[in-house]
Amino acid sequence: MHVHAAPEQSSRKTSIVLRISLGLTLGYVVVTLIAGLRAHSLALLSESGHNASDFFALLLSFVAVYFQTRPADESRTFGYQRTGVLAAFINAATLIGISIWIAVEAVHRLYAPVLVHPRIMMYVAAAGVLMNGAIAALLWGVARDVNLRSAFLHMAGDTLSTAAVIAGGAGILLTGKDWIDPALSLIIAALILWSSIGIVRETLNILLEGTPSGVSLTQIRDGMQRVDGVINVHDLHVWSLGSNSRALACHVTIPDIPPSESACILEKLNHVLRDHFHISHSTIQFEHMNCGEMQGCVVPIEEMSRESGHEHHHHH
Image 1 (cartoon, rainbow, N blue to C red):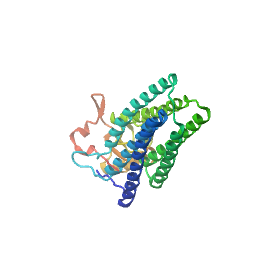
Image 2 (cartoon, one colour):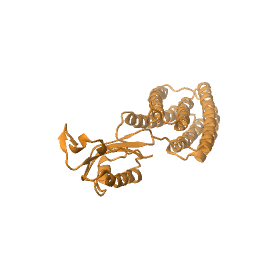
Image 3 (cartoon, rainbow, N blue to C red):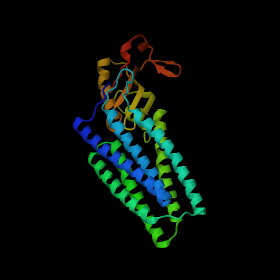
Image 4 (cartoon, helix red, strand yellow):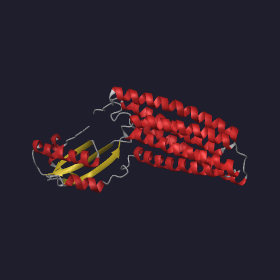
């Protein structure tokens, strides 16, 4: 097995961008927390929690970039791809709790309004728009994979939500209606909850080795069975190694032909998997036409006595 690391220069540039982004985001989390407490603004406190989620999202991206450079070894034959997945699950589960707390506090403030200082809200949120916008621009320059593109989209979305806090502060300043602050908090809490639940579902599916979202086993089986020489595909399993990589294992029944002729079928099968279903790691066991039934799985009698019938292919 081989794990291909990103080019060293590109990886170094990405790490620098992520370090800068992490520092700016952490600083803004502290500022919004202090300002939210001083201004009695739940919207700012919600933004602090929201940007804390940004910090952890960027941290996960940074960890993922680091671990991508580490090769697999004998104790971790698939490498360290699921480290970020596990951290994302813990982070998202925590954020669900935070969003529920924000929502409960916002509802309480709707019934018992608290005097808010809108100018502090607007000043801090304006700084947040500039910071989130700058980070989004930096990430756009290095967003060459799904991991970093998702971080870019996260920060771009947060730029818009922080701009909403400015609008809320202006609304309070013009109308004197303090209920605007908890109403904004409910919206921000809903955004956190919605994104967190999606992350929990995705990471749980990966950790439980479920079929990846958007993958149809029927379509994969049909695509493989259209390859010349393939009689049927069974005992088919597809799962995610990490957030961006998939693996497949299956049994394929073919005619009783020499192993040298089956190599062409194997190459075509992996071409279908790689180009049509984005599966680059596959383990395919060939079984010949004359076979018997054993514990509900087709097991070739001829192959039980010789090892040549068990072919594994790992493509990267």
